[in-house]
Length: 174
Ligand code: FE
Image 1 (cartoon, rainbow, N blue to C red):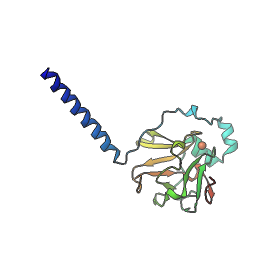
Image 2: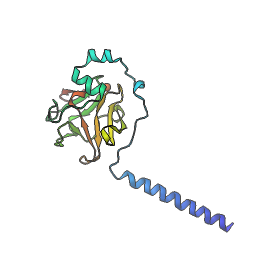
Image 3: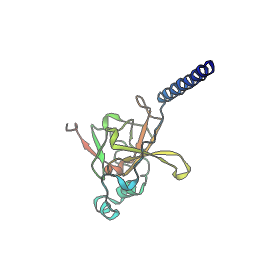
Image 4: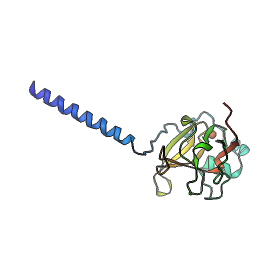
């Protein structure tokens, strides 16, 4: 009986330690891998030919082929007007000017998405690096990457290609 109580106490202590350390991790700026959806099962699916008809060659390269525009060349890198940023492929709302900031990295940077569920994140092992890719949750379009070096309150930097976005000026229609 005594041994059982001791073992139970050890198990309880271990569980408390595990839960405390899990809580501790939430206070740091970690990027989770939210993606469980394979590329062919997003709600909006089109063939490459269909996308090519809708997108410019630059937009197609970024959104459908995971290309990256050259730094400091994108239309929205230096733009800080009030407005909303939508997916250039499917029109889903992604970011607003309220969370856009000048990161100096050469691409539009936001510290959080406008609507969390409209973004999916996936580990990206390309180019010999481990990064977190950011995609549109509706069409799977590649947007850019998210890094844990952004400003408060999230500490995140969503580094997004201008070519994957369409900006609409003014206050959002509710
Ligand atoms: Fe999209």
